[in-house]
Length: 276
Image (cartoon, rainbow, N blue to C red):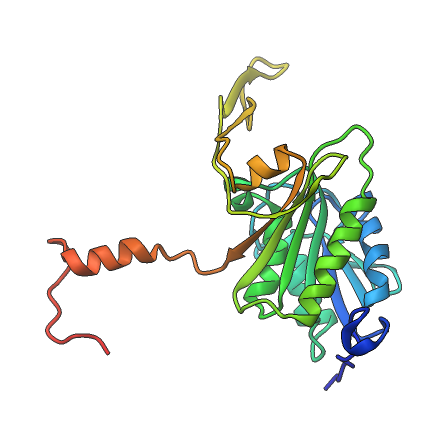
């Protein structure tokens, strides 16, 4: 059994300075060599023990895929640093259930992603999926993404991620919940709490032919069209604000569930006794 010192996690907590108190598992979907991952790892080091388990190559848009049809190869890249030939979800599962078995991390952090993950894109994102896997395995988690920029400087996003990670360590998130953070291009005007926005792509499939004249299809063509609704992640990020959106593992539509229970559609059997 591993016992971590959990006092004095953040500056000002009980009048103490930060010290090695927490264990953080860091992953991403852009791959181990991504600059965003390395900058974030450095930023989190003052909070405690940072373990990195990331894909050995880019695995963007793989969503919550698990590798079940072949074995995985884990390569040590340095002290507490590992690359895995699997998905972001594989990385977090291996990190928690294998490398850190018996001494679970206090927090899972995923990022910094090269590009935003807002609205419905969270369902495709390997970055968000890595954080979600942490939540499924009972560990609080945050996902951090940054809007495309010509300079691709990650310092501001990493500093903010460290601040939010610090808060999460001192004030644990509710079970089944993660924070999805999206950072705009510089200059950053502030931070806003948001809900998921709505986007649609103008055209989703591009048809072409290969050099041998055979038909090929590219998924993901066209530019996304966002609904400019105040309070949503896209709206606030487009205005220069960092969006912080709480996401819940429970995807149940409770309003529809209650309506179905009240209206009892014909395909729903009549219950003989009310459920407890």
